[in-house]
Image 1 (tube, helix red, strand yellow):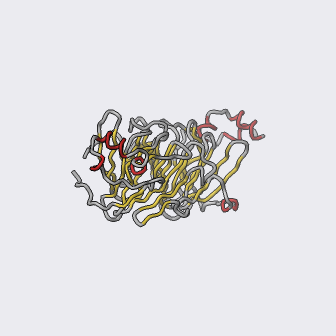
Image 2 (cartoon, rainbow, N blue to C red):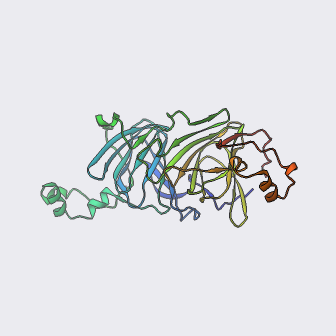
Image 3 (cartoon, rainbow, N blue to C red):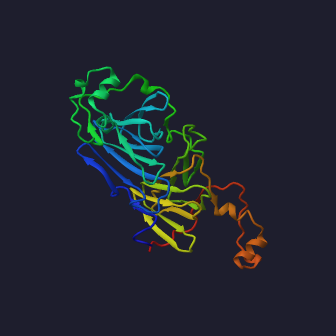
Length: 346
């Protein structure tokens, strides 16, 4: 069991992008977890009344999952697309690269958001700094006002998290259906077993997605995510709840096994074999982000059905009569029951 890992790091103690009394932002990018490729993750915490100030991503689409609290998201997208929606725990929102948006905690408790971004080095602009770049005369001309109207702006650098004065203002339209909002935990799980489940925020169910997706994956103490690999997608997982273990094989033959705790983030490059299991009977819950809108995988169980017993016997250099009696598996189950005792934790 490795104590330091090439594949994982804690998002709770990751890069500190911003912190004040109104909230904090931590992130893992390829600067802090070098194996990340084409994807990164942020954790945004907002105190009651806290606002992630209006900003826009330069180089990344984004999907985000609310783990705690209730937030209002307001957005202006390409071609004058205005959106307002309320996001509750277990729901997700999508923001296109370049769309200006804000996140506001409108509840009485702290809010937490876990966001996956489609770049391993994301960058953004803030609305305040965008205004600061323009002169008072330019701003006045833009809004049909005298330049003096903008002398109130102090031109200081933007704070990424600010606080609302007074009660929240939630537009009536925030209750309307919106293509950028998706209730992943309200979905009837496409895969449901006594020992685990998977719910899918992917293009099949959420049409807004272009180059990202997310699985809400629960693996019970009596189950295991079978060994598998993703042929054309990298996998970035965040441990929401529970304690587990993962094993990853690299092309050079090196093997890494590590434990996972709440707040940990891991990354598996495309086509690397890996497996996941809970180390407690309470199970483990992951938010797993992918860099494709419709991720797929190849599982060990179905793989044994792809080849004849003669081929398998030759490959493993085992007499055919001694081969295990592999079950015929035309459709891979993704999660399997754990009928054997757990391997010891080293």
